[in-house]
Length: 248
Image (cartoon, rainbow, N blue to C red; front, side, top):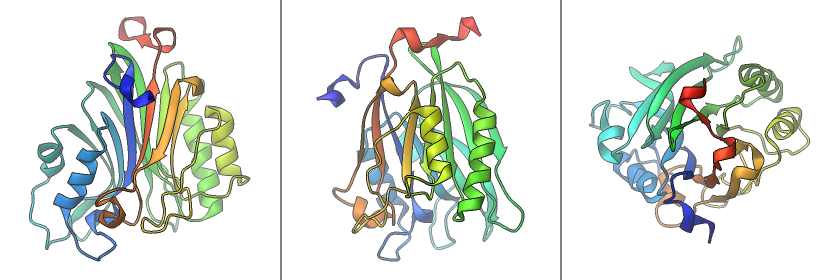
């Protein structure tokens, strides 16, 4: 099975998960439950969306909870304040972080959006990871994808784009343009978590041939911990597509 290669230096399991501000389908804010799902993914690079830090006042834990509970480095990508808590995207990783950028994708009159743009190292070489949560309106998403593609430019490093793209129609412009740049990728259904009908959450990788598999995770507490299911993917970056830090 492809997962069996995840322990090699250039093989990595990645995941994307909209955690719905720690609130499950039962209406309960339960950070420990969400962390159990995150830990169960077995991923080394995880992009989270709708993260409140700290969560709602009824949830009693500090801002360093994610890092402590997962044993991973947490990189925040705050997009706004919500009830005195930071809200936005987070990258969790066990791989060394060498560069962090945060870009604004907000449009006037719409909820603030952003993309967390992080370079980690895999086998001593660079891998660029973008974590985002796009808007709910089609026109909003088109403009946000324009911005993303501008930021990517003619990127020479391998690139992962992951997040809740709020897009499920294959022929919509935003999804078509991303598929052209990255190459087509599997789109398992992730929303709503109890009876998933829509592929809102996506993981893209360039070069496309390095993407081995993409799957939603529906077992255990994943159906109740959030209104989205987590999405996982296996990638293997051969030495030919990796670029050493000494070469940049």
